[in-house]
Image (tube, rainbow, N blue to C red; front, side, top):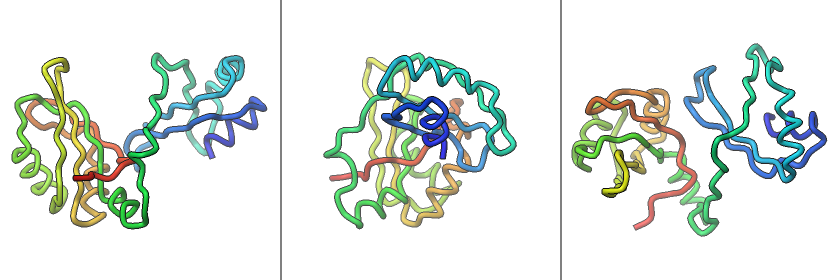
Length: 165
C-alpha cells in the first residue's frame, strides 16, 4: 500500500520499499527507493500526507537501502516458514553471549530453536538472528522491540532470511 501510494503520487517506479519497526505501533518507518532521483525529491511533497489516521513524515534517507543477496532469501516453503519464526536483532551489547541471549528470549518471548550471534571488534554492538520454535515467539519478540537487555534497547524486526547451518 505504501509503495503504491508513493508510486502513484509521483508517477514513479518504486525500486524497493522496506517497512521497519513494531507492526503494532503507529511509530513505524519505511525506506522507499525510487529508480529516478527526481522522483525521490518529488516524494518529499508527501510529508504531512494523512495515511489512515496518521500523518506521514517524509525525509531523505541518510543511507541507501542495502540489497539482500538473493541467495540468502528463502528458497522453499520450509525456509519461508522458518522466516516467519525468525527475527533480526540489532544493538546487542558486546558482553551478551549466545546463552545469555537464548535465556533472555525464552524468559520473555518463547522457546528458541536457533541463534546466530554476530559481531566483531570494529563495531560497538552485535546483531543476531533468532529462530523461535513457534511463530508466537517471534511475534512476542517483535511486539517488544526496544526492550532493554544489558542496558541497551534491542531493536527487533522480521528476518528476511532463514538461519542456515
